[in-house]
Length: 278
Image (tube, rainbow, N blue to C red; front, side, top):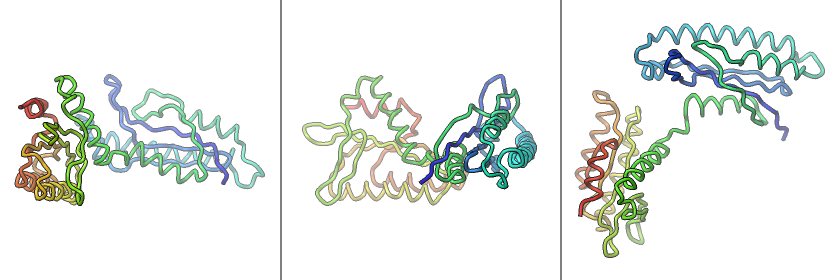
């Protein structure tokens, strides 16, 4: 299968030059040998207004509209000058030069990051995949977030010099067993368990489904007497006064009924008090 060399650049929204903070809001991709140029821009502005709370949403909306027009003009010019399908071969050199001019650094609210290179057999599919990764951040799953929480707790235990007391363990019996990242063993038996849980999704169904899975796991392990009395779940919760928070409260109540202690994932003191207790 033919692989095409693609150049792409991320579009960043950087409204405050003083802080240097930015958000990825789009991507452009050129594959001259495939006669392909495409772009995608973020249409939902909720994330932008949440990140830049002081900013009027119209600043992004208006800027995006003008930039979209510029990209459409560029695409038409690129097709005419370098990627015209009526030509036997595309003018690769000219296409690359025009693309380089498009994405060169400018001091503006919307500006491109450096050019990057990737190989793809389907440039359009690659454009969409890169957009999903860098702009929609589809890699930020609950599993990803929980790995980050585990890393934070591990560092916390190391600083408190109790990390050697905790290790990953599979608890259960021959019929049902569950992996936990932090288990303290005493005389060959689990003495304490710490399991971070990410429930800060906006989707109530995802919160109830993911949280419910852990409620079921805990209940089944309790039924088999495979868990110690003290089990702690440091939890990242959704925003207060939202439907998502109501779903989180449902899961919190179910976990509490299964004798799980719940603390905020950011509460280092409560986590350490649990981890260090005899």
